Length: 150
Image 1 (cartoon, rainbow, N blue to C red):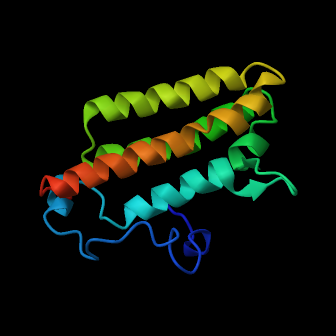
Image 2: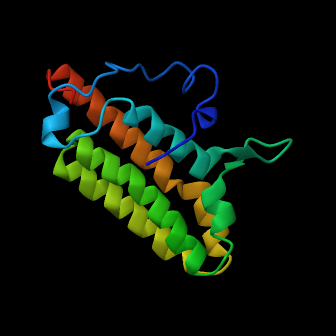
């Protein structure tokens, strides 16, 4: 997955995510992604769910909401982009239970997106990609605490 570094901003993701190593280490032999993939996935989630703000409000929306305006195809494309986050989670070695929850979040977002009018409100309110990013961040912290970060 390629996400331009400009998407992450000058301080990364607000200084919340710290890279553990630049080298892939033993994880490369197992086919897992390098730690640098974690902030890229988190940046993608931010772009999909909360990139823009409605002026004068605290309401945020992202490219998922904009792409979702195209009936059926837009929601399917947005779900495919969200699946990249889930794929990175699989490569990082996240537990199956968390992967299943991530898949369920994407499925709910996709089904709600199929209903006209409800799709726009659901994209702004539900934010499946941000939920998945939160799960990914939590699972990554669990892996690091267990001594198996890659």
